[in-house]
Amino acid sequence: MPKKRTCIRCGCTDDKACPGGCEWVGGIAVCTACLTAEESELFTSLQINGDDALQAVSLAKYNLVESRKQKNELERLILERSEMVKCIKLLRGVVLEVTPQMGKIVLQDYKRLNLGLMLANKLVGEV
Figure 1 (tube, rainbow, N blue to C red):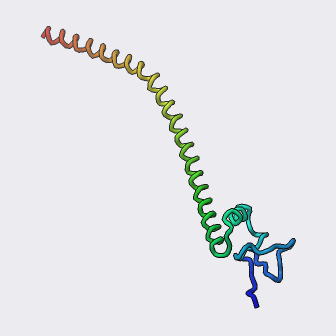
Figure 2: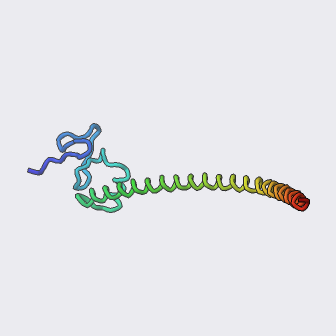
Figure 3: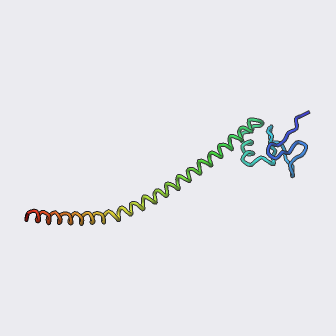
């Protein structure tokens, strides 16, 4: 007597199929109603069954999850870079705007200091 199969996802069996019907996929314990389009494409392209197919699906799902994580991280880094570029542009603008003003202030302070030194020199010379 053959072993009764049970779908590992929905629980249907050889005796009680899914509503609308289903079939078994290769030698694995997943019915056609539960098989995703990605998994179906993978089975077709690899033409494998049984444990090898289940391992291939698991590996494909893992790779898909990892790819999505990497894509999300890349998008985050691109956004972060974009924000950094905006900050750099803003800082450049501030520096370009402030530098000439700072130069004027330094020059004014130098003139005041020089004037103060000349006055101090006169006072010392008079003593």
